[in-house]
Image (cartoon, rainbow, N blue to C red):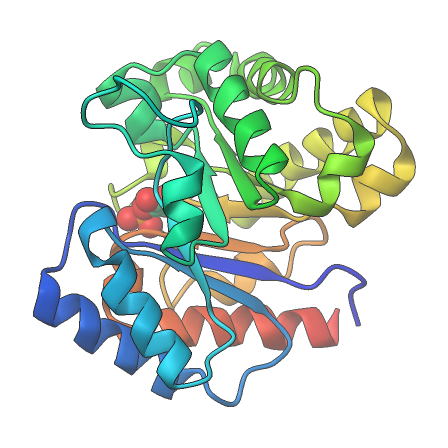
Length: 261
Ligand code: PEP
């Protein structure tokens, strides 16, 4: 039995509507009612947070409610942004920070991501810090320096105590939404190096306790072989989280492998 409880998040991105977000929430709750050896979170679009929260609460579900992004300022003239107080008011417990689509489509910098991460942790919520190299960076041999830089800058001025509320998601950009997945060995190689870096930056206790999850075209069919790797502690799931049975299959793979390895 692994000491780190697996974490599996379903990132719905800019998908679903009022009806389908409710249906998906009910489907996920029903499909996962028997799983207790995994921490599960779903990340609906902002407009559906409250209705998804009501369903989770009415059904007594332990599935965490997540937000896909946040703004670090508490309030003020920041048109279009959503503060952590607002998210907490909606029952949000965990927030994605630095997702590759925020970095590469919206243009968030490492520094902005660090500011957001510190704000999430200070607000008492769980931050999922997403990092990962692009295809060009991988092909030019820069996978390790890119991930190390994103980890170091993402965690600048973050204390060891904050790791109670931090999960790292390694998500190679070339694998997100493309159907291409890192091989379990390649993913393990990066995860192992990230854990070593956490030990250098903090200490072995932080490195051993912190969940490092993998994201990038995880499916029901490939989840188990990824989660069997010693340093892969679950997944961040995009496309496959929009289908309750497949998301449940992935969560169960994390739960079963954690119990066996
Ligand atoms: C993601 O959105 O974080 C993700 C990994 O997407 P997908 O599973 O679709 O590749």
